[in-house]
Amino acid sequence: MAGTSRGGGAAVHLVAAVAGCLVGLVGGSFRWCLARAEELRGSLPGAAERLGCPVWLLPVLLTAAGAALACAIARRVPRSAGSGIQDVEAVWRGERPPGSPWLLPAKYAGGLIALGSGLVLGREGPTVHMGAVIGAEAGRRARMGAGDVTLLHTSLGGAGLAVAFTAPLGGVLFVCEEVTRVVRARLVLVTLIGTATAVGCSRLLVDGRPLFPVAAPVGPPLALLPVFLLFGAATGVVGVAYSRLVVGALAVCDRVTLVPPVARAAVIGGVVGLLLGIDPALAGGGDPLSGRLLGGEVPVVPLLAGYLVVRFVAGPLSYASGAPGGLFAPLLALGALWGALVHGLAAPLLPGAGAGTVSGAVVSAVPGAAPPSGAVVFAVLGMAALFAAVVRAPVTGLVLVVEMTGATSLLVPLLTACFAAALTADRMGCAPVYDTLRLRGARSS
Image 1: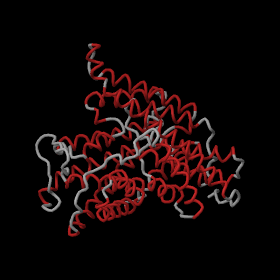
Image 2 (image 1 turned 90 degrees about the vertical axis):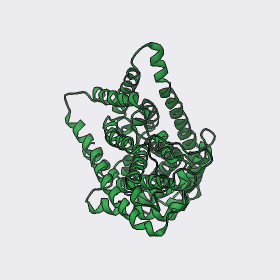
Image 3 (image 1 turned 45 degrees about the vertical axis):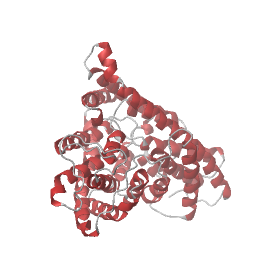
Image 4 (image 1 turned 120 degrees about the vertical axis):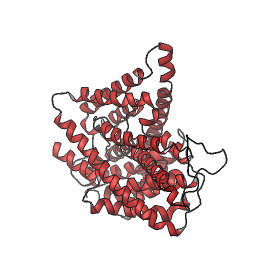
């Protein structure tokens, strides 16, 4: 690592605090704009009806144009393509210098267009990358050494993740467990102050409450821990398949050299737009779908399976478009679907965890009442375990999900499932997805 210089003393903490404020405002405005874009997408069926055109046509045109434009922006600023988390990791490892300030507007505009148009991408990648760029530029302008610039780049990237999910502890753990894989006092302190000011300032623009608050389910009995261990292991297999599909989709697109990248992105966008026209839950980052599942609206098993299969493919396909966008949010939605599906299939065999099994059509939780506890338990476990399997940062995934849901009563099952998922993926010889993407970027640069 390049970022261990001892110069700067308290100055680096002051710079991190000020830069964190900017990260909070930028990340908060990014989230606010994405929420407005989602509302706009929701109005497309009504607009199509008023125009007298097929209901699927406007989503196809919108998403195709958005994917093409976002890809064109990424072509002008190549480091803005994709998630950006692997770029933050590469800077920490000294494999490349921090990016130029031009990365910030490219990531903001490209990410807003790509995610706003409905591609199955997450806001956390652009927000992490923008936070890192702000941190590095703050260090440069404060005339700090290269080591402190790298330290600020990494720490403020974690602040960006905290803003994206309103998860301050998750942002700090992300820096230590995923990006740097070290725990050092100076790194932690700089990340803490940057994250605190970032999340605080973001609350001027977005709600600071948990994203998916659940009616606290009763912690399942310890006798069911073997079930959660098996569920985690199965989730590890799913995570390996998803990681390989992400990398494989990128490799396939690389081989399609006869089609210009922007045109290829437009085609991918058109496909995703068609899904959006069929059912909004099939496209987009997945937050509304996760919210529905964790709020007790559990579709029947065949519909859950359909959502899972479509989003399992649509996520890697969207990422292969080359547009700015992350993997976390779609991954969390996929994990919630997977958990709810497993619960729906296994509930008859699990009398203790099967309470609240939903059958028939979509069922909504009664206002003020606890949602189906078994479905919620497995959806929460699926989110964290799939994250652990793909990213290979089990503690970060666990804390992120707890901060987003408030489901502290599930800590022991979460620990069990995340352990099994990460161990299974590791034993299957699948590298963490961001390690693979970082090495892939190094080969292509």
